Amino acid sequence: MRSILEDFKKYGYFFAELVSRDFKSKYYKSFLGILWTILHPLLRMCIMTIVFSTLFRRNIRNFPIYYLTGFLVFHLCTDASTQSLHAVTGNSGLILKIHIPSYFFALSKVALVLINTLFSMISLVLIMLITRAPIHWTFLLFPLPLFLTLLFAAGLSMALSAMAVYFRDLFHLYSLVTLVWTYLTPLFYPISIIPEQWLFLIKLNPMYHYVSLFRALVYEGVLPSGEMWLITSLISVAVLVGGGYIFHRLKSNFFLHL
Image (cartoon, rainbow, N blue to C red; front, side, top):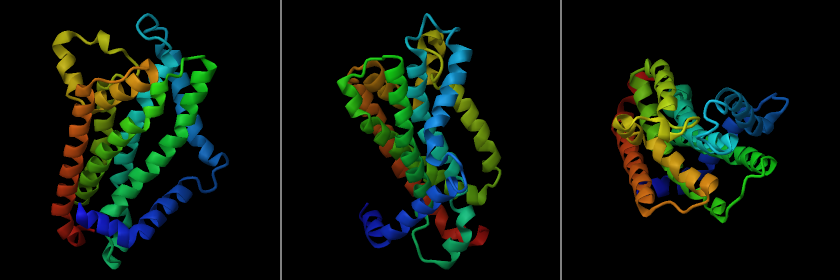
């Protein structure tokens, strides 16, 4: 932990430049620019509402809000980890020529997705106002589940960016993983439709817990139980430490494969 803090103290300006570079390149020559971060979840919500709201109309109250509160958290993790796959291989020239902490390239992708997610929160507030959904005081606590999800995404991103250097098939495989992951996370369906004998599979999914935590605060307006906070915190710390360890062990031979 001390070495990480020292890295950010010494090379923090470089990390900020990485995030700025990625942000500018993402919206370079885009007509709508940053507005896409608001429109994207809104368009996804409209499509999912048209397709699934009728199917689950008796099970889900205010489907647009239910979907958005799940999508924003889930997308924070999957988008960050997907972009991080190319973080090391796509910056091989800099990594081989400049003495800089190589995990910065993975974490910069996570930071960029976090910024986009915060802008996307505007779409959630807009839909809550349009649908006249109650905005509970617990909404103010939304940064906490996002922070825990961010730690989880950071650990996963570091591990994936390092493994992708050695296993290039991971680029193709991970898209299938995220597809299955989407259906294993109750984003557009209620958990009540899952047969009890298969419910444990859903609860083994870390994103189920992060989505549930965020929904409890924003959608349901209740304080999550201490057990829910503990589970998500332990998962976040474990994956962050594990991802950092994997990156540290694999980075020594990057130069042989880049």
